[in-house]
Image 1 (cartoon, rainbow, N blue to C red):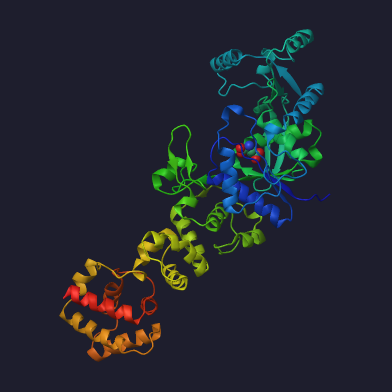
Image 2 (spheres, helix red, strand yellow; image 1 turned 60 degrees about the vertical axis):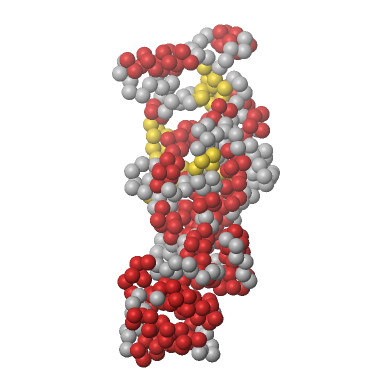
Length: 508
Ligand code: GLU
């Protein structure tokens, strides 16, 4: 039976989305689009204690900025809504009750003190990792140990309770992960997780499985940190009678620090000066601000490209992809099992690649406000032509002014190192002559300028390369920059002659 592909990104609004979360969303999105399926955004906000104000808006804005648009979700509606779990409360209880009726779940009335005491007792008895499980439940206050009439009395008394899954004592739970292959766990290692609380709220596990079922999810693609929960989820599908339509699982590798030692954290980003969030995030508790990709000047296409390559490869040596090319090329089979190291230098490189592919006029529109702030406002065509040259060397638009201000105003200073090393009486003679020859040119194309430079050097018996860097410094102030003859041609004959005059006068 082949079903229409339906995948979901199911974040809990407990804080900002870091790049690991965006990558999960992206892989789901790519998988959906590649398979002509649906990508659903579901907000998992049943844990009121961990709810952080503004987090859901942040998540939606971040996805929107990245161009990861849900087909169904709180914004987009759809036939299986609502898509926010806090608005779906009435859907969950019946399933917990059904499991109780069928003996695969039970009521537990233990107080926090009871639980504490159990853990203490078991620790003292040498149990390394005490939990509520097939052994300890025998000694706790639940509907398996208490007499039926006491259970009834407690329930009608409105005593607080939780509903726990009754994990079998000795059974093999198997699941086939699309990335990791078969994962086999002995049920004795699992604990009797809480599914539902008497405040009427399901826990993550129950709500997640019920919604994946009701929303007809076919593939669950999520972070590796959820792999330990997957066997429990398999049991839930079995106990709820939904095994036949159980989604396939794919658990994505961790994103690691640049040195590969441990998971990439927001602290690593703050320390190393690179973003790990898509957008700026102000921590509501500490008031601290963490920078985002957007605010650092990354293009959303570049961020998507960076994230796509963190844990996936196309199977050949291509690295630069648009989102449409990613949709064409993406496959879960090429996602790796091992953690992916985040490389901040490589991230800059991706932005540079995408910058080079940008249309010059589009860049001009982004650069113009910066120019106006600097008090210059030239023609758009001129800005675009300058952008075409600057982008060959820059990684971000916010570097354009520093690298290319000379396109818009004459330099006030000259790179001192180059002047000290290269400027002398010979150089003076050369540039006086070069200036005259340039002044006499009737065409001022890059080619004309280059030929003039070469013939001047030849006639004066100097090596072609000798004054090249100095030439650049005299007209731009900088020792590096775009292709020199193109840049000089764009600046124009009159301007170049003036600049050479000014430089000669100042340096003499
Ligand atoms: N709400 C979970 C999270 O915050 C969803 C995990 C899953 O995709 O099953 O990541």
